[in-house]
Length: 121
Image (cartoon, rainbow, N blue to C red; front, side, top):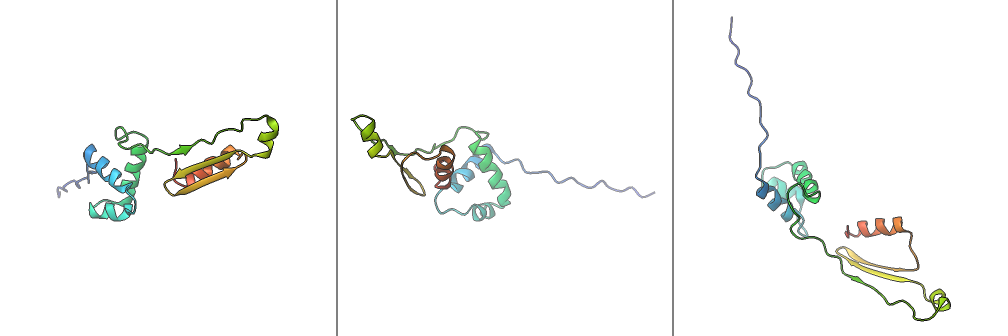
């Protein structure tokens, strides 16, 4: 009888937490290609995208630089309801990918979708 040697199982590398955090934070820099960054470190891009998700969920430790969105609150009209009716509500939000200026009262779901699309959340 021939004795067959058992096949070696390929183990997944166990990357240090600091390495994962460093790459994830580098991938959030403007103009950085996640795929290229992964290739430069001999990783599959899907691995880095997975780490980014874990980072956002706080599974790789506290987020280093939380996103701060500057908001300017416009004063409300001083007079009664008639002035409120003549001057619609205004909202201006400056986001990383653009500026959002809304007059009137937007639907909350639509507003959330627009802010997310502009990179605010």
